[in-house]
Length: 109
Image 1 (cartoon, rainbow, N blue to C red):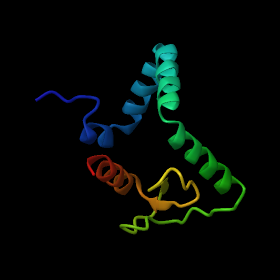
Image 2 (cartoon, rainbow, N blue to C red):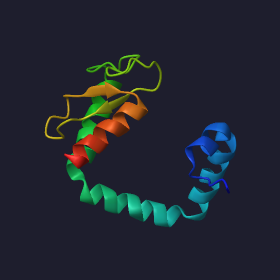
Image 3 (cartoon, rainbow, N blue to C red):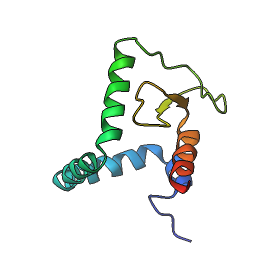
């Protein structure tokens, strides 16, 4: 069975090679990626606004990012999840895996 670059296990065991591949791809497709990002931002203005407000609040110290996930307790890189983009300062602090699960639950209903 061939190993694909997108395979989670491959990326986990070859993180340096995966990062090099991603950087090389980004350089080769910079214009396409920038256009796709602009389109995504235009299609998701509420999400972008909420992320911007949250980032500024954290940077200015108005909100403090906790050291661990509020759902599973994992320590490390914690992300802010907006249950409602209309309330950008209402955030649930989650690890990457819990954040992905929360977003999938929001989409699936």
